[in-house]
Amino acid sequence: MCIRDRNITKGSTAIKELKLAGPVEDNKYIEQDGVIFAKNRDVEDNSYCLQIYPSGKGPDYTIPESAQGHKVTKTWPGAFEGAEALKHITISRNLKELGTASFAESGLVDCTIPRTVEILGNSMFKKCKDLKSVTINARAESIGQCFFENCEALQDIKWPEDFKYLELYALRNCSGMTHLDLPEGFLQSEPAAFDGMSSLERIVVPTTFIKFGSDYALENVNKNVTLYVPADTPFKASPGKQFAIEKGIRYIEYNSPEHLKELLSQKYERIIKDAATGIAVSGEMDPK
Image (cartoon, rainbow, N blue to C red):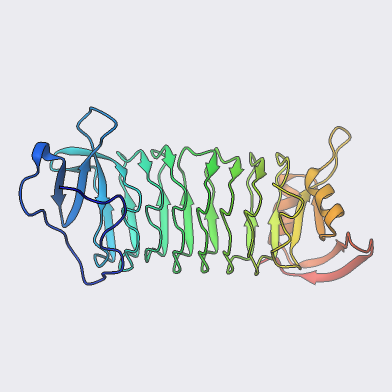
């Protein structure tokens, strides 16, 4: 018996459950609640991965801690790919790894990835057109290539506490996102991570920030985007501020976390520094 690496039910929304035709040698595959699980190939602990989730099954699903008495520790690449009927997912505490494109092109509207997850594949939510919010508590320093690519409805991301790097095309064509608040600890993005973010109004750059991936990192985003950047100190120039000046992007400086919080939460008269012209423009702005 051979089961392909990606979801064989993709595009078949009428399929709501899967069954094995009979026992499989050495229990390489098992079924539970209409979902197929496969024995993990790279470990000898008798654990399993969720391999195929039927595209028409939903709207809610909990990845189980075990299947037929065996721990479930992974999702296979593309396990939920194309599962348009799936709207909400709960990830169990035994899960350690989410394979590449696990939820790509699914109908998810939100997702919380728990701290117990240690490995996140690339293209995790690629083309999830209904996805609006994601909380990532996983032990992840990097958000991988194409992770949120073409998630046009995405508005809110809560980043992992270990987050440092944003990979190639990670947020490409997230055209509905207006605010991107990069947390303290974040260091740098790879080229084209932000391409196509046409509605982006603000980017918060943390004090830990080192650099954008290229000189053209923000070339294909909303031309009216504003960078919130740490002010220079006697000991350190602000890389975010320097980038804004060099590229003619308007920016607002903040001096402390409290000052940043005030800037982001209040409506009042501000002085916006237009780096392209050197002219200070006064205007009322609502950061929402």
